[in-house]
Amino acid sequence: MFLNRFDPAEALARARHVFGEFGGINPSIEESTTFTVLDASKLADIFGGKIGPDEDCYLYGRHINPTVLALGRMLAAMENTEAAYPVSSGMASIFTVVAGLCGKNEHIVSSNTVYGGTFALFERLLPRLSGITTSWVDITNLEAVEAAFTKNTKMLFVETLSNPTLVVADLPRLAEIAHRHGVKLVVDNTFTPLLVTPALYGADIVLHSLTKFVNGTSHVIAGVICCNRDLLQQLMDPQSGPLMLTGPTMDPRVAFDIYQALSTLPIRMAAHGRHALVFALRLLDIGIPVVYPGLRTHPNFSVFEKIRNTRFGAGGMLYTDLKEADLAEQFLNILQRVGFGYIAVSLGYHDTLMSCSASSTSSELSDDDLEHAGISRGLIRISMGYTGSADLRWAQFMEALDGFLRSQNKERLGVVFGERYDSLRLAVEQHKRRNLGFSA
Ligand SMILES: *Cc1c(COP(=O)(O)O)cnc(C)c1O
Image 1 (cartoon, rainbow, N blue to C red):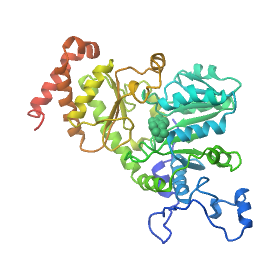
Image 2 (image 1 turned 180 degrees about the vertical axis):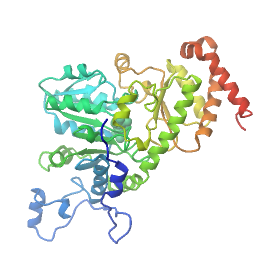
Image 3 (image 1 turned 30 degrees about the vertical axis):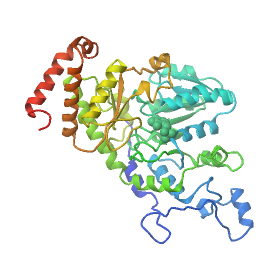
Image 4 (image 1 turned 90 degrees about the vertical axis):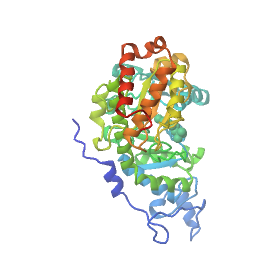
């Protein structure tokens, strides 16, 4: 449908490579917070914005650091935006964008299914600080989106693939609506780096929690804001910009780690996607409820196909729903015991991470809010890792399923699996027979 020739992995490979101070093949980590000038008059030019990093002139570590800038250039290339500014966390990127776009008593239209921290920021902190209010809408209902705009609306906020419900944003149509109202489309692309390039479809600002897939080893907290040069300049302005004045600065050592991690991101995303697709297909096959955007059974499958850069798969995120919190928790305990994955929040790690969203990363939402966002108490979010093999992970899953089915009476599980309970038992038995038990 869209003639999409942009390839983010090629863009990363073409981006300016930064050599170390002594010609090292890796960039140096610039550990200084302040920078000398040869002539005192230069300071005025730097603070006045007349000269800057493009002329190799730096102001102060909180403004921009050379190692952080090197990472920013890579991320801008990846997201096909003019500029990008790495920050200390995903939440810092969201707060900075709001502080840059919205003023007192202004208004945000947001998807009703977003990361719990984003929800709490928009719903509780922003109104208290500034009177900024948010209307929560189902973004798959374009009339509802349209109807939510007021004369004070300054941004439309969505996640490309929502946390944890995996609703896909129809970015071209949402951009059209936002722009018709003179409003910026802000897209949190944390779940889908490389898979989707929101700027191709009209997103004005693309942000990430780099903590997740982009870094990929769950050892640093980080974020990024990708946008055009004018807007970034506004955010960085030494006298009035929220980047300079609220200080969500990234440490250069963190920037170096993420810069290195970018080299393997295309391989990692494809590997997450391969494992997740095999797993989702097998769940579907035996009759476990599964939501994964790479399956035709996903309600937004065609929207995802329309915007996806197909070379990198359909991502590592999927979920199943056991309806009730205590059932979900028991199943998680067994899955962890057999070595299938770890019970932990966050995502994009090389091993599988699993959590009950309602009681963890979406715990900021009340029962009503959870229902409104379509988050069941028994929803188990899975960030599929790529370690081991698909067959090993499946054998571990079937062992856990066997234990889970044995731990509950049939009436209880009937609520979750309905008619499929008997066929699930059969699938477990067949798996055991074929593999001569679980430890073969
Ligand atoms: C984790 C997450 C955030 C927040 O990022 P941090 O790096 O933890 O501050 C924002 N959006 C989404 C979709 C996330 O998953």
